[in-house]
Image (cartoon, rainbow over all chains, first blue to last red; front, side):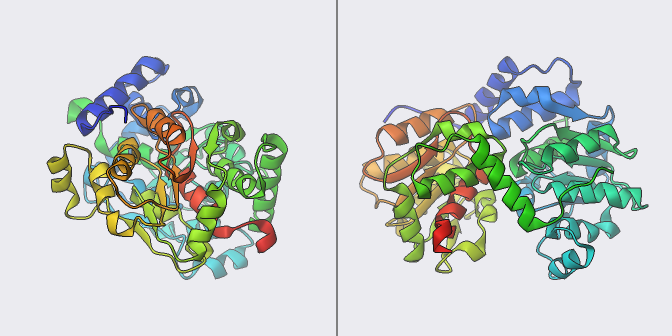
Length: 211
Length: 211
């Protein structure tokens, strides 16, 4: 067997050093740099740095919301499972409503997916929340529709749906018309729950100089 | 708001049709084709088809093991969260030992990561199991070390660790010397829990003609 690195601190150090050496992070401020490093670390692709779209205040808005105790609303269980609980600064709630017993019937009632129906159940928690979409384009599309219809606005929308039908389009819609919300997204088909969780973890862990 | 597809069946149909139209799947038999389609669907990248390494009997071995009731051993909670339980043919156990209370001390004792230590706790379940590694290269490396030292062999090893330190190397080791185990892996840095879960879901759901 070939030798391999077994020290977790050294693995993290080498990983983040490789990302910083290979990725093009110049356009980001310190907060977004640390977030971009975590996104890249989660997917193994330095080139995704070039596809990150975001609003200028997104990093600080998300970081402050978590410090103030905002809940994290996730579109699927995997995103929730990837959030490192010890990073969360205020014992924040992580809410996933996809498997709520009301969701399947509600999806039929509104003529949309279960993922979209689950987003409607976020409404009591939406104001000032951190929203993390790591799977379903319909969840992101429907959230924007709800905000258009007057739903409360989250502090930041983390838009990372993945795939071939609606993922690129929903993120383009968010980046073009974010409805006055701060946002961070990965343009195109790529995304996924590990990337969405990594974005939450980056907002939660804060800047290196705060640690 | 632009119009978007809201019908889940139609979203799946269009997604899989796009993958089949764009990905190069000719080298795969039917089982591996359906697995490759699910991997691509999980990450939004058709080009990963060209980086899948596998042993000839891997798909059937994994599928039969699940039918026979084999447990699924996952290296992190996210992989477990991504497994679609209703696909599992025999109410199979999904086992994640990363957060077992014994894991941190055991990691110190063996001088390896928590992920590697957690793999040692799989030992009573390893024989004939489906192993899904979607995060930690050290989990895959250490599993191979354990098999070298005489641990029972799983039915199939799904190798999808991700990242910059050891991911490519651990998967290259698996593909070059699989210790007589069936395996499916994604060469290089890319991987992750969504892809590992998708591989399990593909083995569980079986071939389209069986449904």
